[in-house]
Amino acid sequence: MTASFSDFLLPEPLMRGLARADYREPTPVQAQVIPLAIDGADLLVSAATGSGKTAAFLLPTMQRFIDVPKARGGTRALVLVPTRELARQIHDHFMQIGSYTRLTAEVVTGGEPRAHQVAKLRRNPEILIATPGRLLDLLQSQHVELGDLEILVLDEADRMLDMGFAEDVLTIIQQSPPERQSMLFSATLQQRGLARITESLLREPETLVINPVREQHPDISHQMLLSDDLAHKQQQLLWLLQHETFEKSLVFTNTREGAEILGAFLQAEGQRVAVLHGVLDQRERNRIIGLVHSGRVQILVATDLAARGLDVPGMDYVVNFDLPRNGDDYLHRSGRTGRAGAKGRAASLVGPPEWNRMESIARYLNLEVELRAIDGLAAKFSGPKRRKAASKPGSKTAKGSKHPQQQEKPKHKDRLRDRKNIGKRRKPAAAATERAVEAGHTPLRKKQTSTEDSQAPKESRRKDPT
Image (spheres, rainbow, N blue to C red):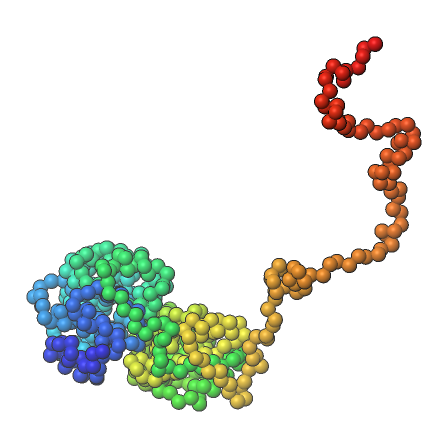
């Protein structure tokens, strides 16, 4: 494995930018992706959030544009992402790494004035970071031209599919030059519909599976607290936020309404908390994220969509107030902490309806989850009662079933109804024959032919007509 960024022979401006951004040594993703990307290979990469994949595709892209500059031209690289927050985060990484270069990058997402974005596109940035919906809108209105595109990157492709961007992504791919270099990054390569995207995007790609899903986040510890109901969960969460040691905490709910209710409860209890969900306009979202970055707010209550791509330094404690719907969502939530090798913790409050889901998530991700209880706030619920598995009808284990040779014969029952009113019984056939003979009605018998009779002439066997 590469031990230093200098082994990649990156241009001096990029090395200075890495030093300024405190990049010390490559992560496993960067060590494997960067050399192949510099060689121009198409890449299909499965890697966790927080593994350093942003720099893994930015550094080779910027290295090419520095080594082979173009005096005039349009956008040379396009990075497609599922959310505005992730787009802004990638742009921040670009500004840090490229602070000593003359390269330019712009962000185009929904939630911002369209006219302002059109004005930014007139500057012909070398790198464009965009969400599929807004970019497709600008392509159809001919405000974006992809004729000069050299590199196309899809980051967190699995989440783009979850959010219904598959058709938009395919349309954008079809409008980009076929000779481009393409890279696709996803937390899992088993996402439904992903094969359709990869077939359209990639040509003979190198496939890299770095830290498979079942081995994700070794630096994150996982805890589970059992809860009785919503009010009990609120008290448990309040205790954790008051007694646990953390720099910043991210609390997840499954709905916008749930986030607002929980945020109001925590504010009423004196906690410095902000709420982030998808209904907020971009200006308010930026303000809230700024408060968290600055440390003026230590606790952020958010939904999955709102927190997508969120990378806040010091976010070392994640709490699932509502359990996520599946293992992949759990992976993305817990991935907000423990980033780039830092230690992190994830706690889940699990009520009776969520028990089976938590067990499924733990099995799917191969997690070691510590069961924890808070003194004075322990739940009455202690998990489902153990029941004997019901046998299926006809199964070998069904009650009363035995080996065919060992089955007992049914016992004869002597019942009164079998002995009374039985009526007149028919006698055996032999007795009936005797009665017929006595009455002069001898039954016909089959004629038997002896050997002598069979040898006699036919004439002798005929009766004499006289």
